[in-house]
Amino acid sequence: MGMVDIDNAREGMISVEDVLNKQGNVLLKKGTILTKALIGKLKSLRISGVCVKNAEENNNTDNTSPEVSTQLEELEHRFSDVMGNAIMEELMAAIKEYIEEKGGSNGTY
Image (cartoon, rainbow, N blue to C red; front, side, top):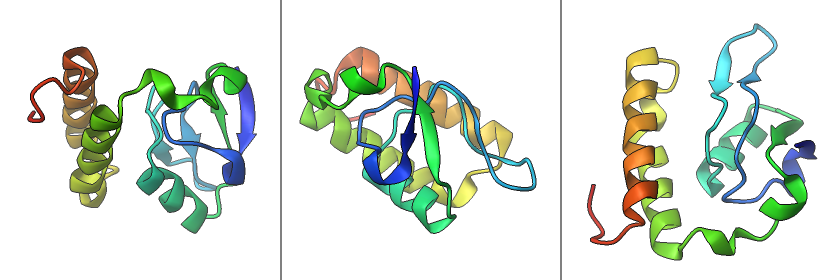
């Protein structure tokens, strides 16, 4: 576990702590898999870093297939307008878990 500067954050890294804004609102929940879209959003919100699981190991994202990464990125995009809504975030987390378990085997979710 380690803090990674947002400029060094990579797709596939997993947050181990909630990311909060200055007001204390949750921007990113613990256990979220970072995508390019999420990293860009955090940068735009001037978040300086993210605490991730095994930062050194996560620099190699080969353990996530490109198909799964694409599906997760699309999921993040589809839910980007409802971030902050607890019910929608729980739904997104359940869909993420399903995608990861299926391994993107059929390209749908």
